[in-house]
Image 1 (tube, rainbow, N blue to C red):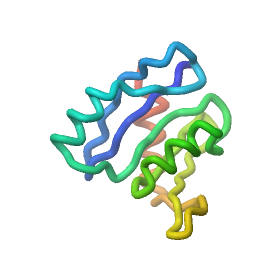
Image 2 (image 1 turned 180 degrees about the horizontal axis):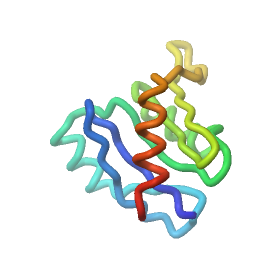
Image 3 (image 1 turned 30 degrees about the horizontal axis):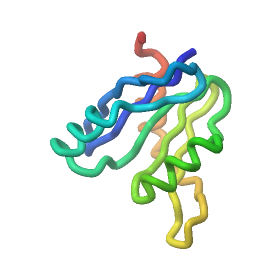
Image 4 (image 1 turned 45 degrees about the vertical axis):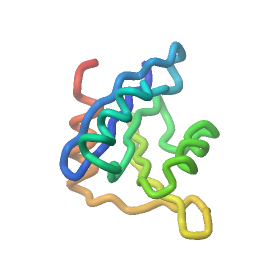
Length: 113
């Protein structure tokens, strides 16, 4: 399953094109990201899928550090987890509203590619 990625702007969730040639990672098109940032401003969260685990990978950690003020949500068929960097740079898991969990799961896992 190829990873999928979205940006959450307010209440708008927009899927981005994954240009990676590898199934287990995502790479976004910088022009697409710039266009979204120009239109919507900073995202509330970056949401992406994993095949099994909802733990951040080493590549995820690099991205989380680059987007340090943006929450990071990982969705798999088995779980949904969210993370952010604390003020001292440590990764913290954050709670998601239970309704948001179900909405994200339904939207991301059930949406055909």
